[in-house]
Length: 308
Image (cartoon, rainbow, N blue to C red; front, side, top):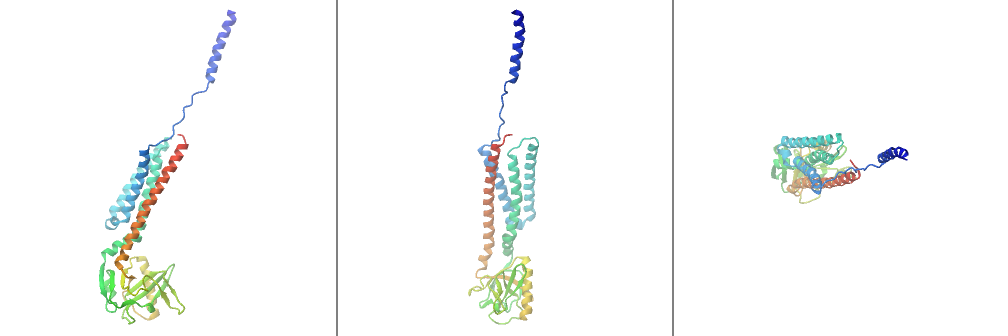
Protein backbone atom coordinates (compact mmCIF):
# COMPACT_ATOMS: atom_id res chain seq x y z
CA UNK A 1 0.00 0.00 0.00
CA UNK A 2 2.87 2.24 0.74
CA UNK A 3 4.11 1.56 -2.71
CA UNK A 4 0.79 2.44 -4.27
CA UNK A 5 0.34 5.37 -1.96
CA UNK A 6 3.60 6.85 -3.06
CA UNK A 7 2.38 6.48 -6.62
CA UNK A 8 -0.93 8.28 -5.94
CA UNK A 9 0.49 11.22 -4.05
CA UNK A 10 2.38 12.75 -6.98
CA UNK A 11 -0.65 12.07 -9.16
CA UNK A 12 -2.90 13.94 -6.82
CA UNK A 13 -0.46 16.81 -6.58
CA UNK A 14 -0.25 17.10 -10.34
CA UNK A 15 -4.03 16.93 -10.64
CA UNK A 16 -4.52 19.74 -8.20
CA UNK A 17 -1.89 21.87 -9.89
CA UNK A 18 -3.44 21.15 -13.28
CA UNK A 19 -6.91 22.02 -12.12
CA UNK A 20 -5.64 25.19 -10.53
CA UNK A 21 -4.31 26.23 -13.93
CA UNK A 22 -7.75 25.71 -15.41
CA UNK A 23 -9.47 27.86 -12.79
CA UNK A 24 -11.07 31.01 -14.26
CA UNK A 25 -9.03 34.17 -13.86
CA UNK A 26 -10.53 37.21 -12.24
CA UNK A 27 -11.52 39.76 -14.87
CA UNK A 28 -11.05 43.38 -13.88
CA UNK A 29 -13.52 45.54 -15.80
CA UNK A 30 -12.10 48.48 -17.69
CA UNK A 31 -13.10 51.84 -16.43
CA UNK A 32 -15.27 54.10 -18.46
CA UNK A 33 -14.51 57.73 -19.00
CA UNK A 34 -16.36 59.86 -16.51
CA UNK A 35 -16.55 63.57 -15.98
CA UNK A 36 -17.68 65.57 -13.02
CA UNK A 37 -20.48 68.08 -13.30
CA UNK A 38 -18.00 70.94 -12.93
CA UNK A 39 -15.88 69.56 -15.74
CA UNK A 40 -18.90 69.14 -17.98
CA UNK A 41 -19.96 72.73 -17.37
CA UNK A 42 -16.45 73.89 -18.23
CA UNK A 43 -16.60 71.98 -21.52
CA UNK A 44 -19.92 73.66 -22.30
CA UNK A 45 -18.98 77.19 -21.34
CA UNK A 46 -15.42 77.52 -22.65
CA UNK A 47 -16.15 76.99 -26.39
CA UNK A 48 -19.34 79.04 -26.13
CA UNK A 49 -17.59 81.99 -24.50
CA UNK A 50 -14.78 81.76 -27.06
CA UNK A 51 -17.30 81.74 -29.91
CA UNK A 52 -19.17 84.72 -28.45
CA UNK A 53 -15.99 86.76 -28.02
CA UNK A 54 -14.79 86.05 -31.55
CA UNK A 55 -18.26 86.71 -32.99
CA UNK A 56 -18.39 90.07 -31.22
CA UNK A 57 -14.78 90.84 -32.12
CA UNK A 58 -15.44 90.54 -35.86
CA UNK A 59 -19.00 91.94 -35.85
CA UNK A 60 -18.67 95.22 -34.01
CA UNK A 61 -16.60 98.40 -33.98
CA UNK A 62 -13.18 96.84 -33.34
CA UNK A 63 -13.32 95.35 -36.83
CA UNK A 64 -14.13 98.80 -38.26
CA UNK A 65 -11.69 100.89 -36.23
CA UNK A 66 -8.71 98.54 -35.72
CA UNK A 67 -9.04 95.63 -38.16
CA UNK A 68 -5.46 94.47 -37.56
CA UNK A 69 -6.12 93.95 -33.84
CA UNK A 70 -9.44 92.28 -34.65
CA UNK A 71 -7.85 89.59 -36.79
CA UNK A 72 -4.85 89.27 -34.48
CA UNK A 73 -7.24 88.15 -31.73
CA UNK A 74 -8.71 85.61 -34.11
CA UNK A 75 -5.20 84.31 -34.82
CA UNK A 76 -4.50 83.94 -31.08
CA UNK A 77 -7.70 81.96 -30.67
CA UNK A 78 -6.69 79.74 -33.60
CA UNK A 79 -3.34 79.02 -31.92
CA UNK A 80 -5.17 78.10 -28.72
CA UNK A 81 -7.45 75.73 -30.64
CA UNK A 82 -4.40 74.18 -32.31
CA UNK A 83 -2.74 73.60 -28.93
CA UNK A 84 -5.84 71.86 -27.56
CA UNK A 85 -6.10 69.80 -30.72
CA UNK A 86 -2.45 68.75 -30.43
CA UNK A 87 -2.97 67.59 -26.83
CA UNK A 88 -6.06 65.62 -27.85
CA UNK A 89 -4.18 64.01 -30.76
CA UNK A 90 -1.31 62.96 -28.51
CA UNK A 91 -3.74 61.31 -26.12
CA UNK A 92 -5.36 59.50 -29.03
CA UNK A 93 -1.96 58.24 -30.23
CA UNK A 94 -1.31 56.83 -26.77
CA UNK A 95 -4.68 55.06 -26.84
CA UNK A 96 -5.97 57.37 -24.15
CA UNK A 97 -9.08 59.01 -25.62
CA UNK A 98 -10.44 61.70 -23.37
CA UNK A 99 -12.80 64.63 -23.20
CA UNK A 100 -10.06 66.70 -24.83
CA UNK A 101 -11.35 65.31 -28.13
CA UNK A 102 -14.72 66.96 -27.54
CA UNK A 103 -13.12 70.16 -26.31
CA UNK A 104 -10.82 70.25 -29.33
CA UNK A 105 -13.68 69.79 -31.78
CA UNK A 106 -15.85 72.43 -30.06
CA UNK A 107 -12.97 74.90 -29.90
CA UNK A 108 -12.19 74.52 -33.59
CA UNK A 109 -15.88 74.98 -34.32
CA UNK A 110 -15.91 78.20 -32.27
CA UNK A 111 -12.75 79.53 -33.94
CA UNK A 112 -14.14 78.89 -37.43
CA UNK A 113 -17.81 79.84 -37.03
CA UNK A 114 -17.31 82.87 -34.76
CA UNK A 115 -15.21 84.92 -37.22
CA UNK A 116 -17.08 83.59 -40.26
CA UNK A 117 -20.56 84.55 -39.03
CA UNK A 118 -19.19 87.77 -37.58
CA UNK A 119 -17.67 88.78 -40.91
CA UNK A 120 -20.94 88.13 -42.74
CA UNK A 121 -22.88 90.13 -40.17
CA UNK A 122 -20.30 92.92 -40.30
CA UNK A 123 -20.45 93.43 -44.06
CA UNK A 124 -24.22 93.10 -44.26
CA UNK A 125 -25.23 95.28 -41.32
CA UNK A 126 -22.57 96.82 -39.13
CA UNK A 127 -20.16 98.17 -41.74
CA UNK A 128 -22.90 100.21 -43.50
CA UNK A 129 -23.99 101.53 -40.11
CA UNK A 130 -20.47 102.63 -39.17
CA UNK A 131 -19.93 104.15 -42.61
CA UNK A 132 -23.13 106.18 -42.36
CA UNK A 133 -22.00 107.51 -38.99
CA UNK A 134 -18.92 109.03 -40.63
CA UNK A 135 -20.92 110.79 -43.38
CA UNK A 136 -22.57 114.19 -43.18
CA UNK A 137 -26.22 115.09 -42.83
CA UNK A 138 -27.84 117.72 -45.07
CA UNK A 139 -31.18 119.44 -44.57
CA UNK A 140 -33.55 121.30 -46.90
CA UNK A 141 -31.79 120.10 -50.03
CA UNK A 142 -33.39 121.35 -53.23
CA UNK A 143 -32.74 118.81 -56.02
CA UNK A 144 -33.36 121.54 -58.61
CA UNK A 145 -30.49 123.72 -57.43
CA UNK A 146 -28.15 121.32 -55.61
CA UNK A 147 -25.62 119.17 -57.39
CA UNK A 148 -24.56 115.65 -56.54
CA UNK A 149 -20.89 116.58 -56.79
CA UNK A 150 -21.34 118.95 -53.84
CA UNK A 151 -22.81 116.23 -51.64
CA UNK A 152 -20.69 113.16 -52.27
CA UNK A 153 -20.18 112.88 -48.49
CA UNK A 154 -23.92 112.83 -47.74
CA UNK A 155 -25.21 110.06 -45.51
CA UNK A 156 -28.66 111.35 -44.54
CA UNK A 157 -30.49 113.97 -46.58
CA UNK A 158 -33.67 115.85 -45.83
CA UNK A 159 -35.03 117.30 -49.05
CA UNK A 160 -36.85 120.60 -49.32
CA UNK A 161 -40.62 120.84 -49.04
CA UNK A 162 -42.15 119.89 -52.37
CA UNK A 163 -39.45 117.41 -53.34
CA UNK A 164 -40.54 113.94 -54.32
CA UNK A 165 -40.07 111.06 -56.70
CA UNK A 166 -40.65 111.63 -60.41
CA UNK A 167 -42.12 108.20 -61.15
CA UNK A 168 -42.62 109.07 -64.83
CA UNK A 169 -38.86 108.78 -65.27
CA UNK A 170 -38.31 105.61 -63.25
CA UNK A 171 -36.32 102.84 -64.85
CA UNK A 172 -34.75 99.48 -64.12
CA UNK A 173 -31.70 97.39 -64.96
CA UNK A 174 -32.14 93.64 -65.10
CA UNK A 175 -29.35 91.31 -64.00
CA UNK A 176 -29.82 88.41 -61.60
CA UNK A 177 -31.78 91.00 -59.60
CA UNK A 178 -33.82 93.97 -60.75
CA UNK A 179 -32.23 97.30 -59.89
CA UNK A 180 -34.87 100.02 -59.72
CA UNK A 181 -34.25 103.79 -59.85
CA UNK A 182 -36.44 106.90 -59.77
CA UNK A 183 -35.17 110.51 -59.82
CA UNK A 184 -35.84 112.89 -56.93
CA UNK A 185 -37.19 116.15 -58.31
CA UNK A 186 -39.22 119.25 -57.40
CA UNK A 187 -42.72 118.43 -58.51
CA UNK A 188 -42.99 117.82 -62.26
CA UNK A 189 -40.39 120.41 -63.22
CA UNK A 190 -37.54 119.34 -65.46
CA UNK A 191 -34.05 119.52 -63.99
CA UNK A 192 -30.83 120.47 -65.65
CA UNK A 193 -29.17 117.44 -64.06
CA UNK A 194 -30.91 114.64 -62.18
CA UNK A 195 -28.28 113.89 -59.56
CA UNK A 196 -30.44 112.48 -56.75
CA UNK A 197 -32.00 109.06 -57.21
CA UNK A 198 -34.14 106.80 -55.06
CA UNK A 199 -33.26 103.13 -55.43
CA UNK A 200 -34.63 99.71 -54.57
CA UNK A 201 -33.98 96.06 -55.31
CA UNK A 202 -36.57 93.79 -56.93
CA UNK A 203 -39.41 96.24 -56.31
CA UNK A 204 -40.39 97.42 -59.78
CA UNK A 205 -41.56 96.04 -63.10
CA UNK A 206 -43.16 96.94 -66.39
CA UNK A 207 -46.81 97.98 -66.32
CA UNK A 208 -49.43 97.78 -69.06
CA UNK A 209 -48.25 101.09 -70.52
CA UNK A 210 -44.73 99.69 -70.87
CA UNK A 211 -43.46 102.06 -68.20
CA UNK A 212 -41.58 101.08 -65.09
CA UNK A 213 -43.89 100.69 -62.10
CA UNK A 214 -41.67 101.81 -59.21
CA UNK A 215 -42.83 100.55 -55.77
CA UNK A 216 -39.65 100.71 -53.70
CA UNK A 217 -39.35 101.84 -50.10
CA UNK A 218 -41.89 104.48 -49.11
CA UNK A 219 -42.50 105.71 -52.64
CA UNK A 220 -46.25 105.90 -52.03
CA UNK A 221 -45.92 108.00 -48.87
CA UNK A 222 -46.98 111.62 -49.19
CA UNK A 223 -44.84 112.66 -46.20
CA UNK A 224 -41.59 110.97 -47.17
CA UNK A 225 -38.87 113.40 -48.22
CA UNK A 226 -35.70 111.98 -46.70
CA UNK A 227 -32.98 109.81 -48.16
CA UNK A 228 -30.57 107.35 -46.60
CA UNK A 229 -27.44 106.85 -48.66
CA UNK A 230 -26.89 103.52 -50.43
CA UNK A 231 -23.69 102.01 -48.97
CA UNK A 232 -23.42 98.77 -50.95
CA UNK A 233 -20.60 99.40 -53.43
CA UNK A 234 -21.41 96.30 -55.49
CA UNK A 235 -25.01 97.36 -56.03
CA UNK A 236 -24.02 100.95 -56.81
CA UNK A 237 -22.57 100.00 -60.20
CA UNK A 238 -25.81 98.29 -61.27
CA UNK A 239 -27.92 101.24 -60.16
CA UNK A 240 -25.65 103.51 -62.18
CA UNK A 241 -26.35 101.37 -65.24
CA UNK A 242 -30.08 101.78 -64.58
CA UNK A 243 -29.62 105.56 -64.45
CA UNK A 244 -27.70 105.51 -67.73
CA UNK A 245 -30.58 103.66 -69.36
CA UNK A 246 -33.03 106.18 -67.89
CA UNK A 247 -30.92 108.99 -69.40
CA UNK A 248 -31.12 107.39 -72.82
CA UNK A 249 -34.83 106.56 -72.53
CA UNK A 250 -36.05 109.95 -71.27
CA UNK A 251 -33.32 112.17 -72.78
CA UNK A 252 -32.24 113.54 -69.42
CA UNK A 253 -28.83 114.14 -67.85
CA UNK A 254 -27.40 112.83 -64.59
CA UNK A 255 -23.89 114.23 -64.23
CA UNK A 256 -23.06 113.01 -60.72
CA UNK A 257 -25.79 110.60 -59.58
CA UNK A 258 -25.91 109.61 -55.92
CA UNK A 259 -28.31 107.02 -54.58
CA UNK A 260 -30.65 107.00 -51.59
CA UNK A 261 -33.33 104.86 -50.01
CA UNK A 262 -36.47 107.02 -50.02
CA UNK A 263 -37.95 107.15 -46.51
CA UNK A 264 -39.88 109.13 -43.94
CA UNK A 265 -37.17 108.79 -41.28
CA UNK A 266 -33.59 108.28 -42.44
CA UNK A 267 -32.20 108.24 -38.88
CA UNK A 268 -34.52 105.39 -37.91
CA UNK A 269 -33.63 103.43 -41.03
CA UNK A 270 -29.97 103.93 -40.27
CA UNK A 271 -30.44 102.44 -36.79
CA UNK A 272 -32.13 99.45 -38.37
CA UNK A 273 -28.69 98.32 -39.59
CA UNK A 274 -27.57 98.15 -35.95
CA UNK A 275 -30.80 96.46 -34.86
CA UNK A 276 -30.49 93.75 -37.50
CA UNK A 277 -26.80 93.26 -36.77
CA UNK A 278 -27.33 92.88 -33.02
CA UNK A 279 -30.30 90.57 -33.59
CA UNK A 280 -28.19 88.27 -35.77
CA UNK A 281 -25.44 88.37 -33.14
CA UNK A 282 -27.86 87.31 -30.38
CA UNK A 283 -29.31 84.53 -32.54
CA UNK A 284 -25.85 83.23 -33.37
CA UNK A 285 -24.74 83.18 -29.74
CA UNK A 286 -27.91 81.36 -28.68
CA UNK A 287 -27.68 78.83 -31.52
CA UNK A 288 -24.07 77.96 -30.72
CA UNK A 289 -24.94 77.42 -27.06
CA UNK A 290 -27.63 74.93 -28.06
CA UNK A 291 -25.21 73.16 -30.41
CA UNK A 292 -22.58 72.98 -27.67
CA UNK A 293 -24.98 71.40 -25.19
CA UNK A 294 -26.03 68.90 -27.85
CA UNK A 295 -22.41 67.93 -28.53
CA UNK A 296 -21.68 67.40 -24.84
CA UNK A 297 -24.82 65.27 -24.35
CA UNK A 298 -24.01 63.11 -27.38
CA UNK A 299 -20.39 62.72 -26.24
CA UNK A 300 -21.51 61.74 -22.74
CA UNK A 301 -23.79 59.03 -24.12
CA UNK A 302 -21.11 57.67 -26.44
CA UNK A 303 -18.39 57.63 -23.76
CA UNK A 304 -20.70 55.86 -21.34
CA UNK A 305 -21.19 53.01 -23.82
CA UNK A 306 -17.58 52.50 -24.87
CA UNK A 307 -14.88 51.16 -22.58
CA UNK A 308 -11.23 52.20 -22.82
